[in-house]
Image (cartoon, rainbow over all chains, first blue to last red; front, side, top):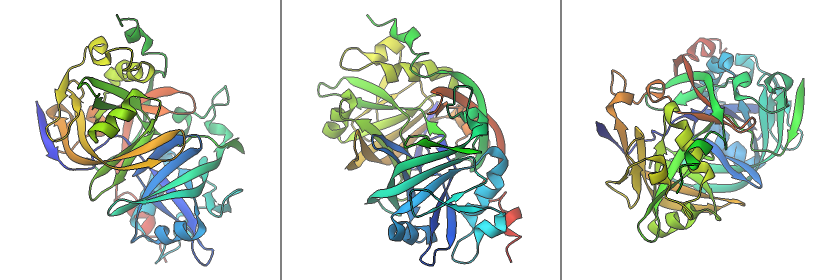
Length: 193
Length: 193
């Protein structure tokens, strides 16, 4: 039987990304977001939702840039830490032992130790409510060789990033492959009249 | 060593959701999206990116409503099918053997066989490029009891929805739990000077 759970942010799964920026003094900072996703194929864009109260908010607006840094399951504690500390009070990169490398194409830092980094230029700002949605055009993607498959394609399995369960507030690793997209549905398509 | 992969939609993971709508004749339809995510906590909102060329695009604009329906790993073939067929040519619900139930609060159908459904009212439309981003306020969430944990919280593990790897175009199941959010990062926070 189904139950009504009310008006809640219960879509699953959500990603666990660290959005990294430079502040007004050029100091690197990052915050963890689970609210966001890819939002356009051409130009390639990703959106992240950020509260105005965060230190990251002003930094994105000032620099018109941010990076999206994707941790592996082994880095989930770091990702959680970046979600519970504020760059106003502390140097999160130093505390977590991370290296900030200047992005090649945008005015924001990359997390060197994370195997996947997206360099984004802010192209839209949409105020929704508690959160503001920042749409970044993905100017370049940096990926460590270790997360590419034999065909040089980015592999979810090799990166093994955490997903976030908004209901139970728990992180999960990636499970087994279920099949090839744009392919396994053909079995059902054949039933069309 | 890291490589530059260019300007590509390579954020990971992405969800696999069926966005369901009624067309101008009141016929149910659905399409699979991997571009989207939660985008605001208050009001609770989810965004989905849809190309103007799709049958779903006009339906969302006309009804100012859609639902987000989250499959389980066992339903991944259905999800893939909804991404490779068009509601213009065929009745996807009938072909896949799914039941469309009218949502309680918005003018859109729910997929009865999917254990998690979000009823959304369109509140923002942002044209980005090839895709348009639709922001829906989540008016209600319907969840099957089987995907709630002992504390009545929605469980990613119990639902076990597929994630999509944009790099290798492969679906993956949910893996093992990695820890509690807003908690496991405390170990690092203690290191703050």
